[in-house]
Amino acid sequence: MLKVYNTLGRKKEEFVPVEEGKVKMYVCGMTVYSDAHIGHARTYVAFDIIRRYLQHKGYDVTYVQNITDVDDKIIKAANEQGIEPLQYSAMYAERCLSDMDKLGVGRADIYPKASESIGDIISMIEKIIENGYGYVADGDVYFSVEKFKDYGKLSGQKLEEMKVGARIEPGEKKRSPLDFALWKKAKEGEPYWESPWGEGRPGWHIECSAMSSKYLGLPFDIHGGGHDLIFPHHENEIAQSEAATGRDFAKYWLHSGMLKVRGEKMSKSLGNIINVRDALQKWDAELLRFFFASYHYRSPADFSEENLEMAGKGLERIRRLKEELEEAAGDEREVEESKLDENEKEYYDSIALFRKKFEEAMDDDFNTPEAIASIFEFVKDSNRYFMKCSRPNKNLCRYALNTLLELGKVLTLFQEKKEDNEKDIEKLVEVVKKHGGEAKDASIGKLMEEILKIRQAARKEKNWSKADAIRDELAELGFEIQDAGNETKWRRK
Image (cartoon, rainbow, N blue to C red):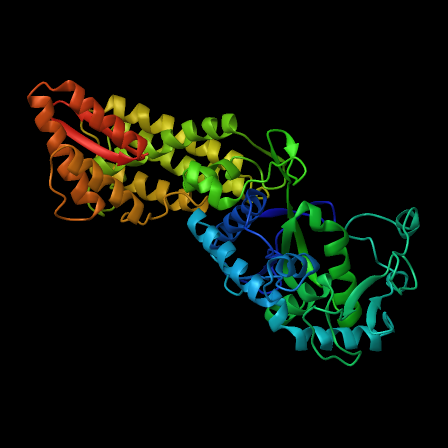
């Protein structure tokens, strides 16, 4: 039984989708005024894992993630660079999605943009006004918070408490400081669309209500995002969606914890915002994803070199087991339990126990740290089996490998890498030529074969300095070589 922590009820609840066998999930996407940073990465890795586990359990998942491409920050940044705001946001939308691709985060099924959903947004605002929850003020349209009696039910706040210290900013025409904009009257130099209230553009909150209801219907199952979005963004989404439709909005609200950098909140003033593309220059994508998964999605996470190094050591243990199983595994054949000896039967049972513990952990509100702990237990069980058996059972190793791959992929591990990375090829060609070889075939595998031949020849000639130099050069490029007698193997780190 899968249980999830529902922010709406502030407790774990049994997960029962609206429609049997299907899950409809909406996660707030990026406001594309700059490159994606590791805080975004933490959130989208978390919800990618959640989506993957739901699929693992057999659900047909529809995943929608919006792109906010019209916003005050976008307009400001575009004007500073002398670019049309929509052209500017289109460029950064592509950059952000590309960076998430490189990180290995699976894409959502649908990426609606605010600028492409204006008709749906206007229709929803019209319904809100018609139902008595919205009002027009000189071309702006506001939502009247005090008319929505359930306002505050997500964040747990009360209207009386919210009113303390609240004020109306200069230039705003709203009736109450708690009211929020559904539609903004156009200012000079801003993009705008025609509406019943004049030229303008949508407020931030309304786009998510319009897009989620359009693509998923109401109510849908999961609404997700970072913890910082609970108030006011998600609170406002609930108010305007239910005011417009008279129906429940989302059934389960899931929020990822904040990411700190070396114990401090990410901020421009501290200069500690790390972009995804910069992080990928320094750390392996799988390591970054594994690091994020090592924290429960609701918990705060601390991004530091020390914590990444610790995660890297754990990931290396898992990778080495995968390689051992690959070497020992036979073809796809069913394991005949009745023919297993005592050690094999013990290992066979440990594989089933591994699956059981992994799924129990993930059923407990997607508890990835516990799921990872079950993998480490399985690593120990596997090592114990290999120590006891000089000739491992090939069918049993294939079964173990398949189980490890299946469950590891839920945590985004073991993704296929684009081996023929152009930069890697260029650098390997340089290594080949530097040591007197010929780079005839420009592929990673062939180039590594040529380099290992050169190194093997150096070892035969007892030219240890050359052999060590080649090993060190490959290590700098992210390739590890292992000498075993006369045989040398290579692997990506």
